Image: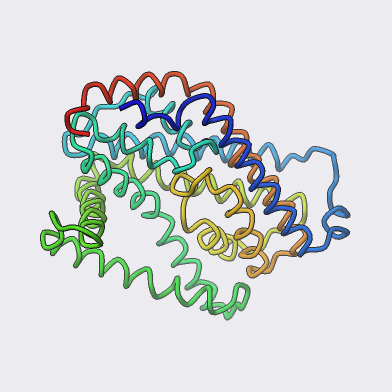
Length: 329
């Protein structure tokens, strides 16, 4: 049982933060070299900017939105009742760069309540589906807008897939949920597909009871709107902001896997993908690299402060939950 929360020990957390910092700095060094060190350092000005305050406020709003969404996923279908304080602490720790398995490893233990491991895993998948519920339609709309205007920044290889595959995926998900019973209880890839479809079913259940569960979609929308606004404001001081549809699409492509899904909150991955997607969207490469550095300070490193503060409380909660549910582990 002790091994189940070993990744939350002080030694493990410290090691993972160091590793995340190494990945972060290495990725940025590579991208800065590709963009040209001279061009990057030439735009690096030490003075503060009003836009950084906007980026901080936007990321704070994104955090609040995620807490709303998290509680809604927990409460659906007689799930665990999670208070605001506990939800905020778990979300803070899940955003921390010290989780090598991503925040989903923690969420599975919290969202299962006194249920089985499978119930926790399904709710994590439902949370992931909820995260993408506002992002995918927004990216689809942005892609359609770019195509209608004849824009080629980003290129058709970005815009056409988002314009076409999102509605196709929505139809496929609806059909899959209807036939999910064929995969439940199976093993291998069928088991994973069945659980994914169960997660999507929970998302549809939230949508069907929108009058009761509107905070789920409002929170998820605020989360992504805040994160996109943070990226936009972080690019402003470096003159690297593309048009709004282009930045929405660049954000969607560069962050198609969320920081809660990726190991170390995406350290070393987002820093490579995001400048490239911004470059494809029309932003100058050097400005995009610097903007992503600023963005990840607000998106990745500043959240470590509340994450560290919340860590002792989450450790106690996970240990207690494991004692209660150990027969089902």
